[in-house]
Amino acid sequence: MIRTIIRFLVSAIVLMLVSWLIPGMSVAGFTGALIAALVIAAIGWVAEKALGTGASPQARGLIGFLVAAAVIYLTQFIVPGSISVSILGALLASLVIGLVDAIVPTNLR
Image (cartoon, rainbow, N blue to C red; front, top):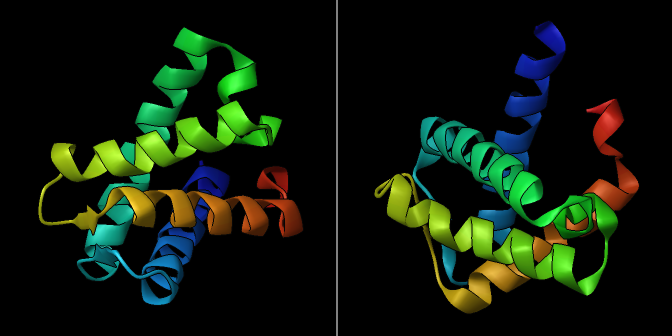
């Protein structure tokens, strides 16, 4: 339970950093980033179950990259006001988050 909470806190911090670095993406503070992280995790889980593990960002392929960008982009419609992102911003955010995941593996977060 504590590990899951820490993972969502770290994900929210990563979203805030990415929104600061990437043009076309903004997050409404830490609370907005935390809500967005929860929604992104839920949509990602559904996408992985529907499309298979090859669609997960951990697959690190083109499909995983595009699915992650789509998940980030769709999040703004589920929680309006928490996150705002353009298509290019979602693609860039997916790239940066993928790089962070490559450096800090998900099982350590």
